[in-house]
Structures are given as C-alpha cells and as structure tokens.
Amino acid sequence: MENRHWKEIFLIIALVLYCCTSVSVYSRDKDILRETAKQIEEGKLLYAKKDYYGAVDKWNEVLKVDPWNEEAKNLIRNALQKIDNLTEKLGEGFELLDSGKIDEAFELFRYVKENSTPKSVEIYTPLVSGFNTIEKLKNRDRFRIIVEHGDELFNEGKYDDALMLYSFAYKFNPEQGVLLSRLGEVEKTRMLFELKQEAIRLFNMEKLEESKEMWEEVLEINPNDEDAPIYLSKIAFKVKERDQLRALASGYFENGVLLYKRKQYEEAIDQFENAIAMNYRVEESRKYIETIRSEMARIERLERENLTEKVAYYLREGIKYYNLDQYRKSLSFLNEGLKIDPDNTQIQEYILRGIIALKREEEKEVSPTSPFYKLIMDLKRLGREAYEREDYRESIKYWEEILLIFPFNEAARLNLTKALSKSDPAMAREILGTMMNEAKELIARDKKREAGVKLRLILDVDPGYREAKNLLNQLESEKTEERRVVTPAEKKRSQELYTEGLEFYKKDKLQDAVNAWKQAVDLNPEFVEARVFLSRAETKLRNLQRFSEASARGTEGPEDELRIRIKKHYLDGINYYMNGMYKEAISEWEEVLKIDPENENVKVNIQRAKKRLGYDTEQGSS
Image (cartoon, rainbow, N blue to C red):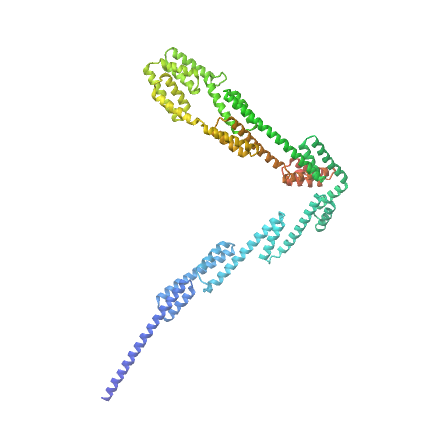
C-alpha cells in the first residue's frame, strides 16, 4: 500500500516535470522564430541598400539557427547572383581598360557603383582602383593634347601662348621632365624673337648703330641665325652708301615739289611717299601731302557743285519740254541728267512720264521706223478691202487688232466706227455686246486703258448704250481720283514747304531740305521748282556722301602707313639688287609679300634675284 502511494507521488512529480519542460521548449522555439524573422527583414533592408554582402551575412545567421529556412536560402541565392553580376562587370571593366577602351570601362564601373555600396569592401576596393586608373589615363591624354597644342603655338611663333600651355602642363604632370627643356627652349626663342624684332625696328628707323649691336647680340645667342648676317650686311651697305641713298631720297622729295607746282597731284604724292619711305624730310613731305589733298578736295567740291547745277538744268529743261508735249526733246535732256546722277528720282519719274506720253503719241499714227509698221499697214489694207466688199464683221476684226497694239490709233478708231455703223442692227447689237463683254474682261484683268478704248468705240457707234456709258464714267471717276485735284490749301502748304526747304538748303542742311521738298511735291506733283530743287539737293547729298567716302580713303591712316611701308621695303630691295646684294633684296621683297601677298611685280623681282644667286626658282618658290 505504501509502495503504491510512493509510485503515485513519483508519477505526479514526473508529470509536473514534463509539463514544465514542454512549456519551456515552446517558449524557446517562439523566441527563435521571432529572431530569425527579424534577421531576414534586416537582411532585406541591407539588400535594398545594395549591401549584398551584409544581407548574406544576416541570412547566414538565420541558417545557423534554422538550417531548413527556405526563405533565407532563396534570398541568399538572389544576393549571390547580384554579387556575381557586379564582380563580372568589374572584370569586364578592367579588361576594357587593358585594351584602351576607357569610356566603355567607365560606363561599366559606373554601373557597378550605382548598384553597390561602399560598405561592400570586396566590390568597392577594386572599383575605386578602376576609377583611379581611368583618371590617370585621362590625365595622361589631356597632358598630351595640351603639350601638342603648345607645340603648334610654338611653331607658329606664338611664344607667350606656348609658354603658358607648357607651364600649365608641367603643373598638371610634373613627372614629365621633357617639359623643362621645352620651357627653356621657348624662353630662349622668345627672347631671341623679341631681340630681333627690336633690331628690325631700329633698322627701319635708320638707327643703324643700335640695330647693329642688337644683331651682333643675336649672333652670340644663336650663331646659326639666318636673319642676322643679312641685316648686318644691309647696315654695312647703308652706312657705306649713306650719301648716295640720301641723294636718291632728296631726288624723290625735289621731284614731289616740282610735280606739286605743276599740279600733278597724284604723281607728287607718290614721290613724297617715296621720300618718307627713305626717311628723308618726313615732316615736310607729310605737310606737302596734306596740302595736296586739301587742294584736291577743294577741286572735287567745285566739280560736285558744277555737276549738281548741271543735273538741275537738265531736269528743268526736261520738264519744260514735257509740258510743251515735245517728248523726244524732253527725254534727251532728262537722259543727259541721268548720265550724271543715275539715282536721281525726279529725273527717273519724268523719264517714265515722257516714255508713256511718247508711246501714246506715236500710237496715234504709226511711225515707219516702228517694228509694227508693216503689220499695221497690212491690217489697214485688209480692213479697207473687207469694208469695200461689205464684209463689215471681218473689217471690224482687223481694225480691232490694230487697236489692241496701238489703242490710240486714230485711223483704226475711225474705220472701226465706220464699219460698225454700216452693219445691220442685229449684227451691230451682237458686235457691240461682244465688245462690251471684252471691255469687262479687260477691266477684270486690270487693263483699264484698253477697256476705255473699247467702251468709247461702243459709244461712238451707239451713244445711247447705257451700260457702256456707266462703265466708262466709272473708269473716268477712278482715273480722276488717281490724278487727284490739288486743293488751294494744299498748294499753299506746298509753297510753305518749298520756302522751308530753301532755308535749309542755304544752311547746308541738305537732308532737311530734301524732306521738305519731298512733302511739297507729294502735295503738288506739278510744282516744278520744288522738283528741281529737290533734284539739286538729292544730287548734292549723294555727291557729298561719295566725296566723304573718297576723302576717308584718301586721308592719311593705316592704309597710307602700309603703303609707305611697302614702298620702303620695295625701294630698299631695288637698291640692294642694283648693288648685287641679292639675298638682302629678297629679304626686303619678302617683307612686301607679308603685307601684300598678291604683289606680282615683287614676286617677279624675287625670282630674278634667286636666278642671280643660282637658285632653282621653282624650288625656291615652293
């Protein structure tokens, strides 16, 4: 009994212990599940931030606790694929770098950078190395381009620019020791260049001793300099032949004075410029040139005023004969004026008026000199023959053809009217109706003058033809509007403007005068005096503008200085050539070609000098 009692107690204790153990295990499993879920989410956050290695570490921690966790396994598999993809791209990038494809490598490295994070040391360390390599390669390329451009500038003689680029390249890549020698070479070349330029300047100013010292210094720096011996030879010649050259320059000056007195102004200027080119009595020569140009300007001004008056005279005469219906004579005067001033608007307007008036006058009776004369004679003959055999419709057709060519031909109008009046009433109505339709068609085509001729012919035959009368009245009223009657008020204002224009003209306010007289003519187109003065002012204004442009070209300025420089080098070249100094002559003429590359005379002279030296001229000119 007692033993059974103990057995029961033991069973109860065992049951209690089992229950406690089960509760403990359940509680521990629940904590594990919570922790693994947390680590999976943390891994996903790292994955989203592109830290694939960190994500894999988190998910591996899950598998240590729960080796059968399928979600963790799948996530690790995806992350490892990403890592493999990025590693593969890195490898491809380095291969591209090795083959010199920098831009393509850069694109791959950029892709890796955008799809990873600096925390992924395994990826980022080689990635940084790749970018650094690209930067070095690009720097090397930039360095090469800068140096090459510096070389180009150096070869073009732009030493300051070349020096700036070389200095920049040296700071950019100080490891390139070759640049030090380049910098030294540029400095030396630039100094030599400046020294030579100063020596040339002194030589051109005839400061021969100072120039000689500088050329000797050039030879000390560079014994192989090609220019120094030539200039030293020139200096020796000028010193030796100083009196002879001075006599030559004096001859140019004296010739200039003589030509000036003879009023041969262009030739005098040329001689004075030769004297200036040889540095002889420069100030006096310049004063002579200035005086000559002032005199030439005065003569030009007088000629302009004379031409202005001539143009006004031709216009006045042209208008006078136009108003007298002497159109040929009018046109002869107007055309003479147009030869002097081709842009004269008043002359152009009256020439147009004269041509139209002459054409209308000639149409009344066809001249034997007209190219249509034979045709018109034939049409007249056919018209008369048809009328005589009473074929009025045919006769009318021929007279109409004449009027189509010459709408104002009196004979054709008379005979057409005569033929129409002889035709029977029914035919007359039919013909007049046809003519009426033709007149309307001509108006539609804006041929109002021809339409007016037809309408008048209709009314000559049938004065009561109401439609023709109304249409002709309409055309006449339109023409009257176009001709516009000048009112007394407009005439008065036109006269006031004319007077204002005269005041402006007296004060040489030509543009204001032109404006006033233009308004006067617009108000009163037949105001002859306003037209004549308008013509005078416009001509004077145009001549003044042309004269100002010519004066601007003639006054001493950069062009004159260039011309004198050319003459200096040209004359010096001639002197050297005449004394057998062919190299020296060539160097002077080459200076001319620098200013005037198309100077054919100088090119020929250079070829001659080279032949004297025994050069192959074709080779020397290439």
